[in-house]
Length: 91
Image (cartoon, rainbow, N blue to C red; front, top):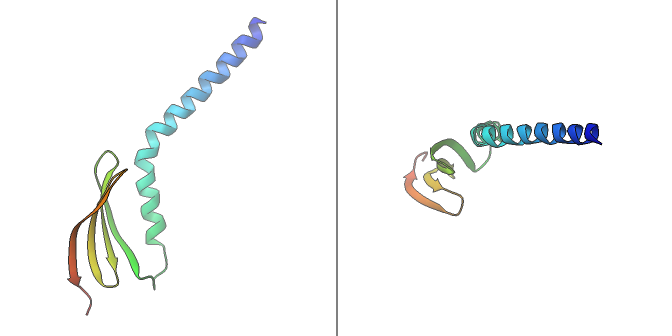
């Protein structure tokens, strides 16, 4: 009985360590993985991701080029707001 208890306890501790490591590294790796996915996208796309700048926890500035116009968008968990909109940059 005690051997079974200790093996289950050891398994739960190992699982907790894995979950904690994932929760610590995910906020840092997710923007990096998203940046690589967008950069290698279609070259003929109307929407191009220029850069993503983290400015706080779960808050990012995103620079997009949409049909030749430059947009800077502040994005958070529950909001997205256009901070800057440029006129045509590629006539």
